Image 1 (tube, rainbow, N blue to C red):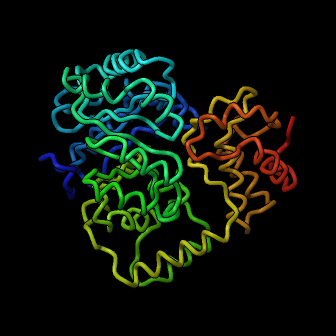
Image 2: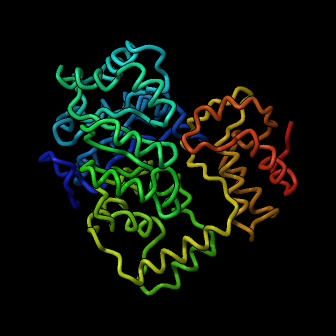
Length: 393
């Protein structure tokens, strides 16, 4: 495992962190929403990662409907709490009054079965939650008091909004100790983007990366993208290229990967072990540019399958619908074929979309990607229906 500086503290963070958004579950479908975590497998995966050098574990109040924090708490028993830093997130989007800060923090500490967390960050800040929660309820004062009381070690935030609001939040507090942004080889100018990363880093704020594989879209790439990778003399799979793209950057301290299977843990540990700043050659960067250009040709939906939009009031599995749409758009050779129908049915089972969106827009309030779900869903469902992949009620 390789390690990098993490702000002004003495802590050296592993370049690969264990993100607990996509723990293994017993049922198919929206992984981050399902509470049916396969506990024994999840604990084994987390502990294996820690045993092999990971020293930073990330969870949240929301993940797996609260089960993620509970499972992480169990995984960090038996001495593992001393081997890794623990981070969770304050669900400011749920706050209705200032006292909610302490209410949720105490609940999270109970779930995690610990007296303190090393890093506690405001979750998914946008301009609205910054102004109407953090500022309105004076939550930075609450954070600092919790730090003085020994409940949290360090203060930070994760971000989902436009670049100009990112700078506003960075400049709104001069004691940020970590910052979590979405960045990958496609989302270079989206939300905070590379520009925001560099700005925060210039302020001395450590940078953590979420969605390095864009919900799996950069792991299971279209055939045309895979052909670009295959044509290059240096042989790496799409996952390794996507992670190396980020590890190459001096501003990146840690990549948080939501690893579901033991094989994913082992593979990512192997990639992290050979990572270093400046690892990409000029030709490597030209390859990445070719991949980026090819992806731009696809009219896919920027859904990361985080499932924050769930549950749908009428039972549509929104991430599944978008995932199936993206598979269709990026797999021309399978469009309308029996092979596509069969693979989709096997993959999604009962969660295969079978109801028409009613346009209530409840889901849109919670989407960190700001996807206009109600506007896109008819387009998605029409494509699937026309190509024989969907029988709606």
